[in-house]
Image (cartoon, rainbow, N blue to C red; front, side):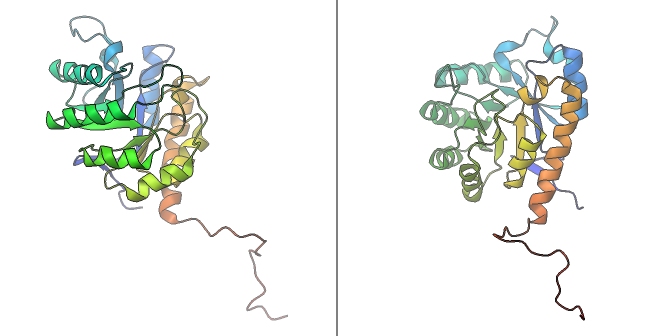
Length: 257
């Protein structure tokens, strides 16, 4: 199969699986899971890591020569807070890329669309490469794209729920109208969820809890890698038409009776 590359803001990636770094039993398990997943993009919550590089930090377990670091603004509930967090990450040398999260509800962790759009506009103007985590809402996705987002990241289900792709129709519509990569973010619980997302035609899947909270995170990371690859290949291959009734695998046409 020819090289099928994910390109975000002009930067190519061979893997379409993006992986988070929270909730693992320990840093060594996280390291092994990253390795097994084949990911090239690793997300880190800026507010949850030690940014003073003279002290022990989660960042010590992420090889910058192997993985592209994507800071995220997890835990931010206002546009201003998210903007400040992104600026802090860039200031300490993490990255000028940001997975932008602005949460609007504490229980569901659904995004605040209005604040997310506001923060996107500000950060894009400041030269950030912005990947916003958003609802599976086409209208808001188009607004984020028009504001300069480098990718659109609609949720498959609530963060950490493991419920899988709850609204495939909405995600496929976002992909249909998007002119930037679409990456499903949140809700993937097992390999079949990842494959299902990719079969919709999206450009990638970002996950954390589905791997980190598995009984064997390293084994699950490997399974997710295969699922993303299989789902992508199935989409490119084009599935057979669905039919109401049976259709013989070996039809009688052309057979002499």
